[in-house]
Amino acid sequence: MPAFIDRAGERYGRLLVTTYVGRVNNNAVWRCVCDCGAEVEASRANLKNGSTKSCGCLRREVATVYGASVAKHRMSKTKEYRAWCSMLTRCNNPRAENYHRYGGRGIAVCHRWSSDFEAFFADVGPAPFPKSQLDRIDNAGNYEPSNCRWTTARINSNNRTTNMDILLNGKARTLADALDLTGNVVGYHTAYSRIHLRRWDVERALVTPRLQIPR
Image (cartoon, rainbow, N blue to C red):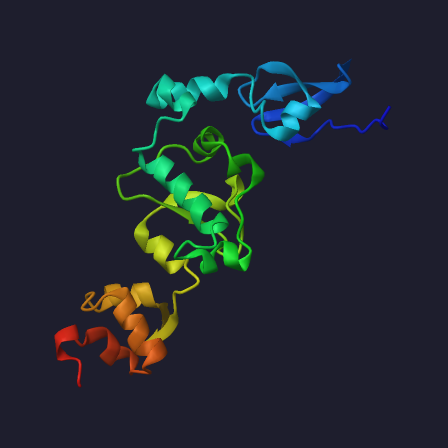
């Protein structure tokens, strides 16, 4: 028989492990308290593999927001589902266009989200507005509940590894902020190329329309 390990205090999804109950079919069973206040008993195996994440309230809440079809993963046309798929693709598919910025530099998707859209949706919630984007708070961190949020395109852009810190009017700014201040005369990628690759003066790079680029 394996040595006993006290799991009290460990957290799995919405469940906080409190008391050892015993063994059933050679699996350790623990009593847990859900974030909603209900108690539930679950095996260590089901807690570890993510099969049991709550007392049942998680599935009910998700179904309430988008209907019972959510539990069957039929949200393929929603922003939330597309964000989940995109996250997995850029971290796991070496042939993805932007893999080098994510999976290629060690950014991973946490185990809880890697094969469970429902868990992802329960953690990040519905996108709060139509143009919401999924963003990592720490750009060097993984995709996991403590490091992800819905945010605006502006904040997401400022948080990218490709964003530049530049000096405009004597003050350090991100390239996204500098473009806003100068009226967004050119797009982000054009400005980035002019400053980073072609070594243009910052102000000239930001305010010169593309049709007036010297040849």
